[in-house]
Image (cartoon, rainbow, N blue to C red; front, side, top):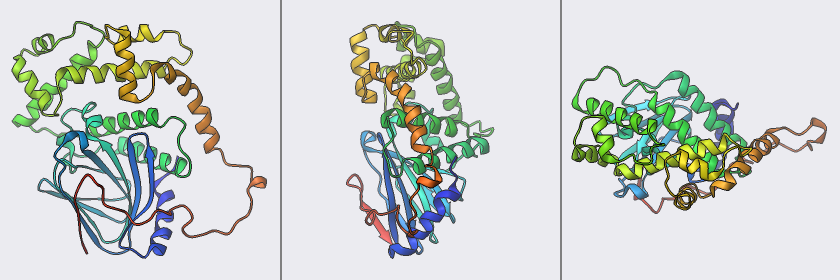
Length: 341
């Protein structure tokens, strides 16, 4: 598995030849995820204005490759070192600064992460202590993906994006929230119980907001307010969870022991056509094609990762910047960007 030490030397060499203050050394798209290896040749500071719409916003997961990355958001100021990560949100103003370093940035659509993680905003700006073992796995996973697909597309980008977001949510969810007993933390635990109840009863086709509220002995209006925290509805959340469960079953059943119809009913859908349309719209791939891709993906990835025999590798001079060739990082159309040196 690739490590940060694998990408860092490449970024260092590229930065020496870039001659700019802040440069996109490489940009990769994995389905609906955006990954960038970026570097700075001298101290820099970047400010991002908030994005008003959740539908247009993303969460930014930053992994320093070398040096220290300083961040600021919602009044919290901190730093991250190589082997660590920091989660930032485009739904609020944030700032990144450094004395000159390279880092890996991954943008995750806000709706994707909010559908998998309770109170994701609580985890922004490293409010809680990260789980060291899960962090090590996450850093290794993301850097390996960048190394493996830096010059070639993955065989099934949307499916891979789904797995990446799931593991990111698992890692962030493993952060230590401590022994806080404030109202916000109580609300978090209530939401956690509700989410667990929904997960357990996804197969119930009659699962309703009323049944969910009754399970936690709260009113319907209070239940709705809990989901409004993430700008979603109970029905939308349940459907996304059902689609995610169906995806996991399809990938885990490549030989097709269960039909698509059986899986649709198993995860709580009453109508197979509605399930197929919703699945295709959410994952951008029909459910019937997921099995084939799950069979083919591993062999293709393994083949891509296998080095050529030494005798078959033609000798070539080593260039200092032969893998990072993108132009200067440009401002995203979704937000205003300001720079001060």
